[in-house]
Length: 147
Image 1 (tube, rainbow, N blue to C red):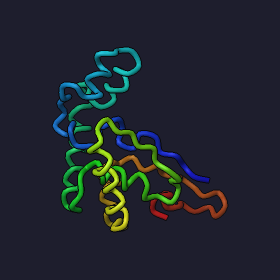
Image 2: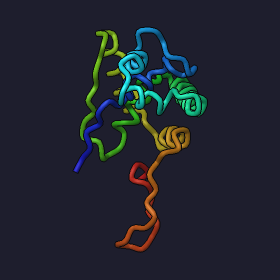
Image 3: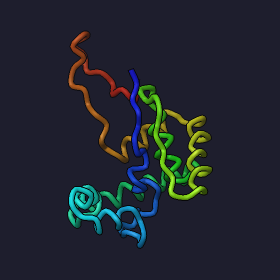
Image 4: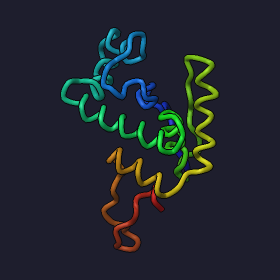
């Protein structure tokens, strides 16, 4: 069984252009707010005043991890998405041709992926699912990404 990753860059949010918490003119998030309804509620998950500081901190830290590894933040996010054995495919979207080559550069990072890099990203995100008990062994298992 595998997983298909849809929008591994979270509609561009993981590319680095929103790290400062601001919404660039002409960006997808700006369009979400202009459209309103459920799209603006989705954008609020990241950019509402009570969420912006936390999200900006996480995004900035991801950018620093990517820079340390010698890659872009988008490449880091894509490599992380496909580094787990549970991922079968990731669906990428592009609004400019230049994004194709840059995003495919994630393959180079994937070839260098290490448990240490995995740990840094997971600690930054702080959203790794926790399994309380493996009912076959009655033990607390490692998260799937770390097995």
